[in-house]
Length: 330
Image 1 (cartoon, rainbow, N blue to C red):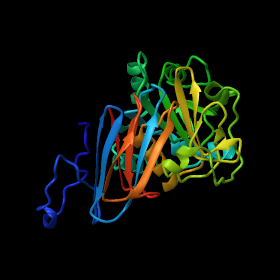
Image 2: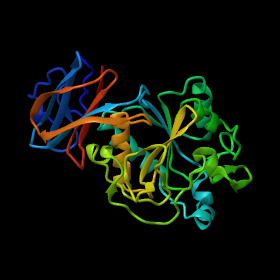
Image 3: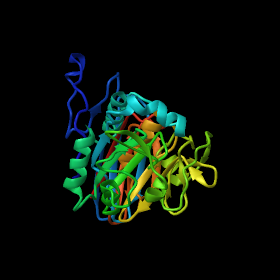
């Protein structure tokens, strides 16, 4: 039997009589309980999806090309974000934000989907994290929401620690600005020349505000991806696109860099974008992910699906506005 979700929050006194069997039932704030279970053996997944009210559910079988899911994510908090934001905006229309609030939302939205490995870090902690995981960064991720990285990890050189770390197998998530354009040190904000190419090769970041409504792949619908903004997005060719696109760019793209990957989420900051990131983390999506099959219905439900070796099963409840999710692996 695979791991099952723990209770997300304690039930109220009025619901204390509810018996949690094998932690099958989980709770999120509100009036409903949600839960899922899966048992994988002999190429078959036997699943159950339940909620205290009728809700849409999806059972998504994914192949990952032998690559591990990110299970440890550092969300970078830039202490100079407010100080240099105006300068960065004038140069590149980078978005300003309350970093701590959005980091908290990322953590919460990932948590209700079964991902509990997110934590915040500052410049020195980020540098230490890259150094400590450099020998084997598979399964490790860094989320950048600001427009500049600290000079300790990036200054526009191919040998910078953040680049070496990704090339060794790490996963870098980036949103809200042109990736690689700026770094910051004690003397201020600095613009690199050709910084995009260090992360993206020959791909160019889109800096024209526009939206797309055409699914980039079958993963878009299977995971109920919502954000279609192409601002700061990158071309989909040669990578994994799972957002919405215009035939060249896609709102969410994983692109390879050495043994690792860079995932760029286009747009500024809104709940659609953060929900999408929650789905990516909850489902364990990586550069090698592809859709095997999907089954949809209404809770309560159970059934069986065929699986291949190394496949995973992601069950989420709530449809477009997922309220619960859990990833199951053999």
